Image 1 (cartoon, rainbow, N blue to C red):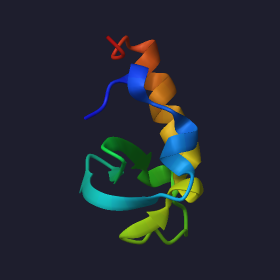
Image 2 (tube, one colour):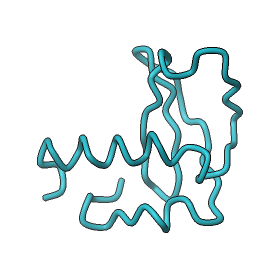
Image 3 (spheres, one colour):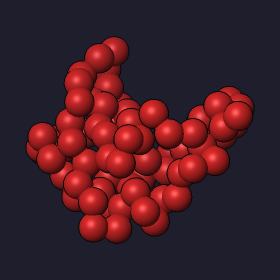
Image 4 (spheres, rainbow, N blue to C red):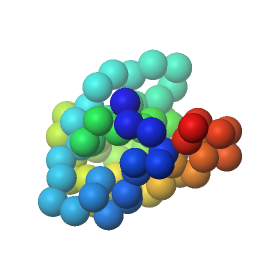
Length: 76
C-alpha cells in the first residue's frame, strides 16, 4: 500500500486499469498502482462494475478515498 504523500491522482488515472479486489461490508474494493479504494454499493445503483475498469472511470471514488485518508491522518 502506498502512503498519501506518494499519491498523485493524475498518475492513478492516466492510462491505468483498476482491478477488482474484493467485496466486503457493502463496498467494492478496486486497486490501481498499489492504491486500493472502496466504492460503496449505494453508489452503484444499476451500474455495471467489471473486474477491470479504466482508472479514469473510477477517479471519483479514488479522490474521495484520498481525501478521507488525508483527513484521518493516514499520510504519515
